[in-house]
Image (cartoon, rainbow over all chains, first blue to last red; front, side):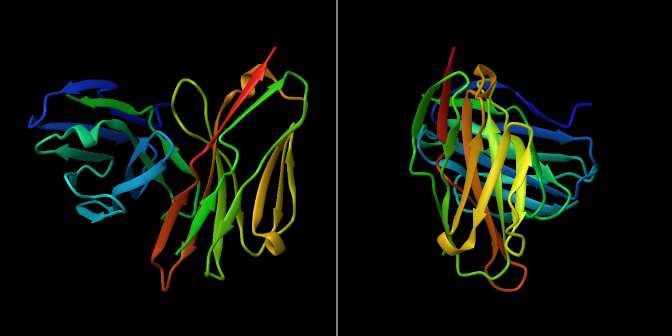
Length: 114
Length: 117
């Protein structure tokens, strides 16, 4: 019963480096999301996808790109040129309905950009 | 614009005490949904409850209960006879239909609950 799986769990990047966070879910959900969590800020939506091959911007999309692969279950978050302001904990989530049903979250990726 | 306020940043109680976590929301939408999520020290967020704007009935699930009052725009969460395992950050969240089907999910900043033995 994996649910939502994120990799990696921890990463340290130097400013300007790039990386990709991978999210996979086994619940056959259409809707997937990437959030970032910062101290005292709650969770903020970066990008989301309403289905295979579709993505859209959320509340804080700048500096990130996403892709929803042909395989419906995967959702990638890319940082092309990491900045210290992107130091955060990143969560992937999926849901059966768009934002109005229970969301299932991954365990998070703690990213530090130095 | 919609907003979720969790005024209590941190709460500390002793085991077996009852504790209420406050959530006040703002929205112009007629149709909206309220959520509570728990984030234990392990880090993942766990869904606790969802309420839609047309259902003001309070809900009880074991030691957990929720009080939804549209008149005061509040959706408070009470833990009865708290236990150490209840220690976590609790988030209240709101989804509203800001026109058409353009939903937006807004999280509060969370309340850190520490239950001491």
